[in-house]
Image (tube, rainbow, N blue to C red; front, side, top):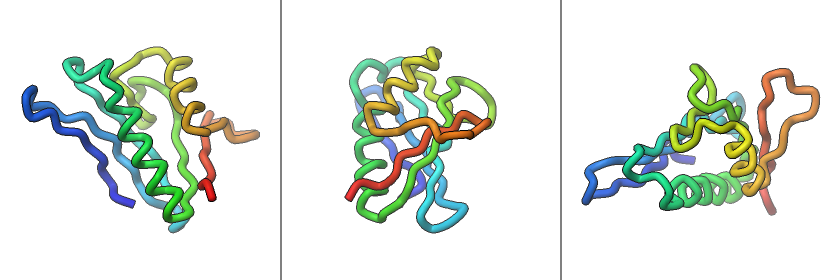
Length: 113
């Protein structure tokens, strides 16, 4: 998997991105940050980037992990929304679910066959 997925709007000169960190093993990756500038919001860019992240993870048999906490240090940051319930709904639409017994409120998405 690539580490940085991005969308460049040449007209606006701005970039939206998703950062993915592989580890602790070859079969696990952490979606560590999402960013969408205000001018690019509402266009479905993060959904398209997440579709590509999930497709690559599936192709490589990787489990994805993320922590849906908007604008908090060290957690997933999606500046397109400050509403955690909207983030959770977005990630559930990509088959992420909360890991059982996980105090860090991590969501997990196993690879699709």
